[in-house]
Amino acid sequence: MNPVQLQRVMTGVVTLVLVMLTGCVATPPVEKMSSATQLCDGSGCSTVAPHNAQASLERIKALLASGLAVDFKTCETRPSESNCASDDIGFFVMGGPIPGRGALKGLSILSATSGTTGQLDLRIAMSPTFLGTPMACSHGDATVTVDVQGKVVLDLKSTYCNWAIVGNTFNTVSIAFDRIDMSTRKMQGYYSVGVAGTGNGKGSGYLSMVIPDNRIGRQAEAELNSFRRAELVGTAGLIALPTPTAKLADRRVALVLGNSAYRRLPLDNTRNDALAMQAALSQAGFDVSFALDGDFSAMSAAVRSFLSKAQNASVSLIYYAGHGVEINGRNFLVAIDADIVSPENVLSHSIDVTELIATLGTVTRSTKILILDACRDNPFPERFKRQQQGLAQIEAPIETFIAFSTSPGKVAEDGDGANSPYTRVLAKKIVEPGVTLEALFRDVRKAVVEDTRGRQTPWENTSLTSEVRMVAANTKDARP
Image 1 (cartoon, rainbow, N blue to C red):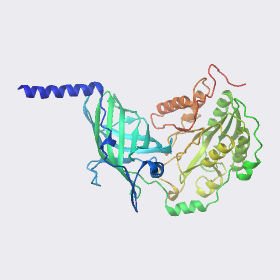
Image 2 (image 1 turned 180 degrees about the horizontal axis):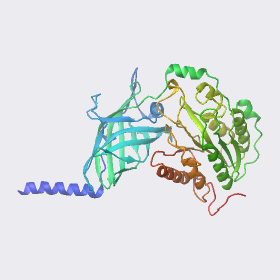
Image 3 (image 1 turned 60 degrees about the vertical axis):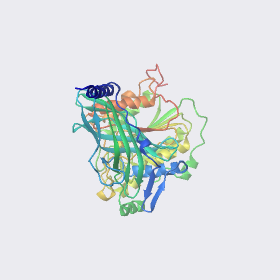
Image 4 (image 1 turned 90 degrees about the vertical axis):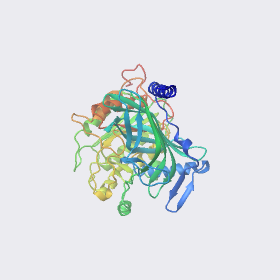
């Protein structure tokens, strides 16, 4: 081997060692774009720019929100081509005990909400493989932003994945979109992937992905719009609410709703779940109102009474266990007198969650918490179903914390015991002193994922601006 050849070998060895020791960070894909993102529809394309960034993000959010909780493929292609050159996007793991090719087969957008100004917040599920074998990954948080040059960029925060005994973190997943077509639902752009942990690697290229469309048909939508909808609290009802007294420093109120005795499709555990939460919240110091197996009239009366209490409370919490269904992107809490398989009857005998949150936000500006252990499958005829199961995402208005027993678009388990896996853990955790609300639900999520072996992942959406603790520190029992 001559000196030149030896130098090349040594250079390669040093490079490989550095990769193994320090991990890999791929080149930011935004640097590969020479111009701003093109946002297209059937009538043509427009250039994204700082002055129209917010409007562009809202259009992108609408595209993503209409395809939630449905898996879709990511594939390698070229900027000038529309066909895929492969059925995934790849990266190569060079460090670690087992080198080899990894791939990102697809994604699923679980939620798409408006974050701070100039940003979308996403919850994403990835479907990666290593050496052709699926990897198990936690759900990841991502943002979509528009930079000063009008480039739309998706950045995924570090997400842990496991393959056999090998654990890796996707520390870099970034996509800079140069074209987003609203009519074909295709998003294309430059990507980079970086992994670190047991093995280190990276990959980059140009990808294409088509966002699924899980909207119902126009005819079914028109039919739904013709149905009479129940009104929870109209304008006259809001005016009739008593004038709030001075807000108490630490007056916390809760409403627990539990429905099980449905005429069709009765539920086994929801009665027990509601009783468990009533006891836990009382122990945590809440003034708890309770309604069990209520028809729509009883549920509405319970909510109206609760709204009066919430006006001068520091924290207002609503917990619901029972049938919850999604109808064309909105969620409904179903009363026991509803015909659960008829969307027309459900609309007239159910509480619209969006209306509930908006009404609660009207009567109080203090902390609002909504907990839904109600993510059962949609029992409606096929024409009224979107492709996703379970409940739809809900955006949290200011000072609101919303918790689902499972991810949007997924179905929760009822469990084998007296309580659902979610409420069983929540009722225990909620009385622990000194724990912030976010930490509490993070612990609940971890426990439920473990108990269900990954089949169920609780999810939260928050717009709280300060820390909230359910029980004060160093307090075993918060009851007065």
